[in-house]
Length: 135
Image (cartoon, rainbow, N blue to C red; front, side, top):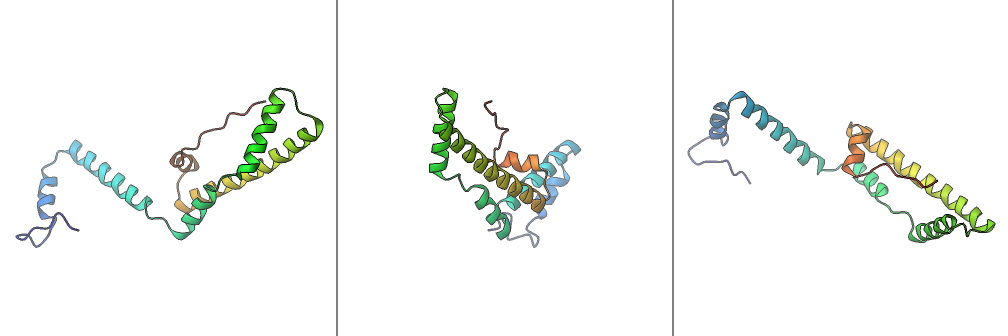
């Protein structure tokens, strides 16, 4: 829907062009930045099929049973009540989760390359922050 069209103008943007021409340099700079940001936002909402597949994989959660078991064993370790078998299981789950995280990181890198954007920018878009690990 073109909200700028007018019955008396053959060019629907002519009135807008005339108003833009009256802007001072600072106002023109602000408008330019606004238009570029608006364009970027609109383009970012249109995902390629490849981007969509990558994002779906990124957003795929860790299986709930694995996450719950890992949390349980980690809590037991924190309270020093882990036996050797549980400790071995915790190591196995930790390795699994690290592999899962490495796969996600590689997907973020792939998305960064696909979009030609810095990795930090991609991570910010997904609201990814550095993890704080317990020792």
